[in-house]
Length: 114
Length: 513
Image (cartoon, rainbow over all chains, first blue to last red; front, side, top):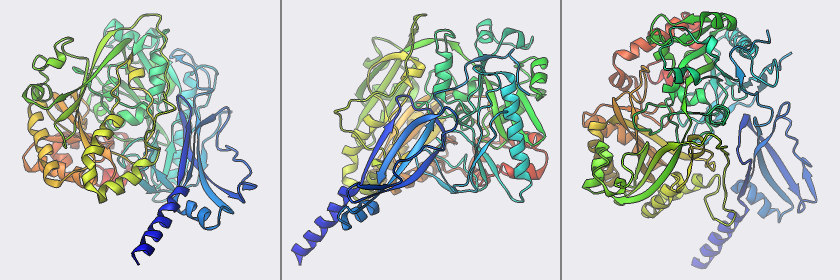
């Protein structure tokens, strides 16, 4: 019984190997707007993916990417483990950047507009 | 035509550090109008104002709708959260140098202060402000700054962010004018009567109604956590550009160090013998040991040709906590309290930069690796009560058992803002920082209870975890609370307009309605 418990605990612990996260960030992150969360599924060892790539379509105008986080929760890792890698879900969170195209310092005397 | 606000129907609002959640009805994002690129012009401010007014008007048409501006979602309290529409302002990054010709003839500032006035739209982060004014073409600096730079300047100041620059106030004490949009058909330019800044002609060009017939309205609006409408922009005073040379160290919490921490007597401890009183001082007490991390930053002139760079740095081989590591750690530390003391020692060094460097204020208090699930709550007491308060909190820590927090000690001089966290002539801000966990949250609640039980006068940081109740707010600020409410009614005379900017946070603190 004790051995069975140890095996069960080890098996459960092994599922945490499925949890992972990687944060990619700009050197000077200037975040524009909200974080945008996209679910990404990979099939059969990434032979196929949905979506094929993630278009940062919530970034407006000249906005680039500021940060991208790829994370796999315990349950997403569990699905990958139980399906022997046939289905591997993950969550991608991206944030847009204000850094490019910010307005330059003006002078209070400058008019323009409405 | 300027880009109009865009709507994200997502209904779960989270703060940046993901410690606070609120269901709302979606988020509107405002975009910088760029009326006359590449520079900011008054037309940009007017267009942003018009768009904010249109959003307020649209919200007012929906019965029961609420509205609140949010900047970087940096706050650790629910101050910016709303059950209605959140209005994302972090793309409004217009900025202007105030020309001498636009400064009011009665401006009482020095010639240097007059030459260092800047307007920033609400979405500029503290990093944006630093990058703008510390450029060698401008040669200016903020006199104080919080430890981080990701907050928007209006979000940080509206919640009372401070630093620890000795002899100086908090971040909001840089502000001398506020442009606020409270309703669909009004917007005000608020200044202190005793410190007029902009000419009537300039305010007329903006189309705002000047409001500077007293000091009280400004002193109320400057720390109002989004409750007076949407602050479109602010004008700040700055100081000549300087550099800070940091001097980190560790010391035992002995009588000599208590004289420094509890009385700012820098002659009492050997650590300060060589350089004397610093410009910035911080002590971090780990209550599970008697070791204190010290950070003394010394001011020096900045070479005129110095070009500051701002960036995260990284040691690619180093092992550190993952972005989301603290969420798991909080659970582990709640379950295994024995590992908290060694963890706290490690965490203090992660949470507080203890490296030695020289740079502008914007470089020293610059970009930090982001971490979710950090917890922070701050309590301020008068310097005269500093030692008593700290000893009580250390005692409480020992009574309740280990908690994954450290006590950061920072010092801030008084503000004129009616609800300023820094209300004491010289205040010790005790920043209780650590991992968000059940035991940490219980400690925050117990800390305020303990100081109250000892009859101590204290305030709490509006932008961090706090246990304010209507009674506590009233006790902390007395008649200033009524003056603040009166000023709010002045800007938002109709109950329905005030209700739009009410949220649970101010309601629970007796400041709504």
